Length: 82
Image (cartoon, rainbow, N blue to C red; front, side, top):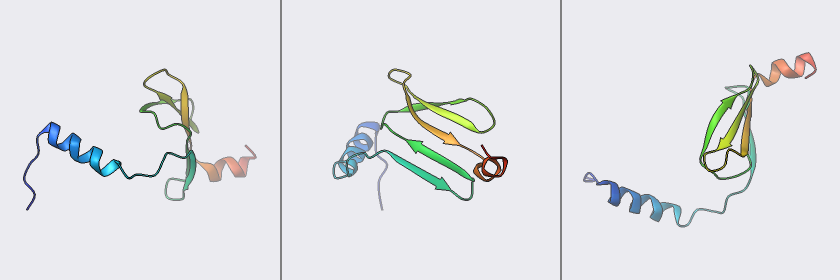
């Protein structure tokens, strides 16, 4: 049984888990269930900014730089020639 942790213990635990994580690599992933492609090019913490029905951009909390995108309705875009 695992006992509850305070915030410091939890932070230490999470840092320990992340210690052996592989280095960040930019990625683009297609999600067939959502019919979308998500692209992340920088490992920053980010917020989403909706541009239109198809495009959302991810901006860094640190400097507002674009660090990723979400393209939705990929099948619809392909059929319409976008």
